[in-house]
Length: 374
Image (cartoon, rainbow, N blue to C red; front, side, top):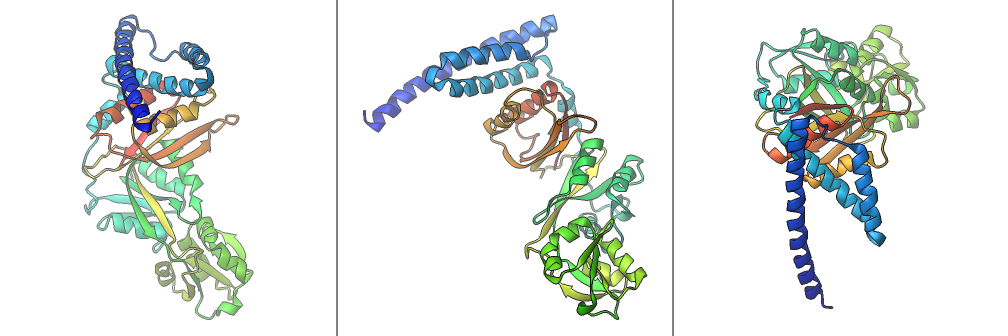
């Protein structure tokens, strides 16, 4: 058979499948109306497993593909049912009532970030909030606490570096507090080796920095045979070296931090990657979705079923979402159970189908938090 003839036959079959799919979705509407009247839960995992097992057998040699097709179809059916039964879900209300103006230029804002003056977080906060009062905190926990007790309206935190990867502690705190992410900024990172003015590079035996700074400059540290000492931030490292006044100690920090604490730059651009960049996020207790919002963040846990993660991710794929980040973090006080953090490209206010899918997930997953669209 010629390719064009095969494609003609496929077109005929697709038309038949589409008509049957429409009939199946009509049945889903009828099911939803029945469940709405009787108060029956939308998700019935036992029933879905029975259907999937049955169609897999019916699929014969294509059984596993048939199972995947029906798993996705039933997920779409649930989305439609959630819209009918829970038209005004909590997530839908959050999205519709979210503010649309971040007002980042306001001089009345108090913004928390890590480190002393000259830290990378401080620089990122100043770039995002050029006129705000920046409140410098000793660690990531304190940044969240400053937002929690309303001393600061926003917090600026690093979440990912192009060389060293994710900042795990920040993700743990995101999952603990479930505050909204309302903005982000990418900051090129240039690390310098800095010490007291009496020191030369040949004197250095120990370097001090935040664990991310040490990781991002690991090759330079290894090549020079330096010992390492962790501290709370790169700017704290600069302060420590300035206060200790040890000729064999140096800080890995920004040039701004070196200037702030009167240190001499012994070497610059010592990071492993010339294109070293860190992504910073802005957190808030209230949701804000601006007109330019183009990235969605959320977290969720999964039921203990084979293929449950695949099933969720396939729903994002079916809606055309471009997944840019997935991070798993252990759930405290649990045995090998995890929360998943996701970033993907999209705007929840522009596409009703996308919003409907997220609302459905928020209802059926064991845990689900919409962390923002920014």
